[in-house]
Length: 257
Ligand SMILES: NC(=O)c1ccc[n+]([C@@H]2O[C@H](COP(=O)([O-])OP(=O)(O)OC[C@H]3O[C@@H](n4cnc5c(N)ncnc54)[C@H](OP(=O)(O)O)[C@@H]3O)[C@@H](O)[C@H]2O)c1
Image (tube, rainbow, N blue to C red; front, side, top):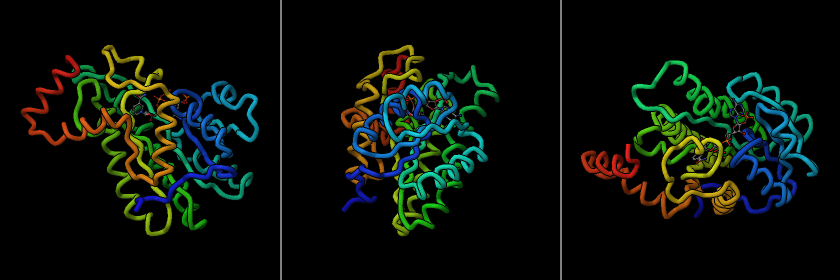
């Protein structure tokens, strides 16, 4: 039995995608729209959102900063006025700066915590009461395999994504008995502007369109933990359970850092 409602039929589904202007979010918006969903696009850069919406019907654009709780409430209310309800909220917005221990500053730490950890919390604060009132719908939180175990360069980023895994588990415990889906997405490496900063050969690198397909596949099966590509993520899950002595040796060897 699946842990979440299986999302297989998209025609008419009202999806709010935050972080839709670039990368995986842009690819997912396009795929969902092709499947018949009504997709509202949010992010900070209007031009990027308009480029995704171009020549496609029924893709309203709502510019917002996901680190601002008031923006979540404002756009939620605008969509409720427009649509009368929201079936799925996807929190794709995120940021990554490769960081070694000696490069850490309070400003970088705060920036990544704000967007990667607090934004999903603000999303839940803004949307869970509405989903409860509707007695249905779902929330998709995008974390990362970087949150599963410590990895050089992932200082702060990995910690925020580990916290998103934890947050999603606890949300699930509270919400699934109310018929509300909580879907956690843990991608491996996907070629976007974020990973373009990595100065090493990324194993099992996917294109954003492949990541979008993998997310849809996981939603269709009602999975809680949607991780991909599985040839890579299953190995990582295993590595995370190694004794530390072995894990640290392996992590140095794989990243070369
Ligand atoms: N690429 C990977 O290998 C990978 C792996 C694991 C997890 N992820 C996660 O997947 C998600 C998408 O990443 P991506 O690789 O597709 O990166 P991306 O191309 O940079 O996309 C990130 C999106 O988030 C938006 N965003 C950033 N800050 C925002 C803010 N304050 N308010 C609203 N929107 C904001 C960006 O748009 P604006 O800048 O226009 O606002 C952009 O559309 C992130 O959560 C990332 O951590 C990515």
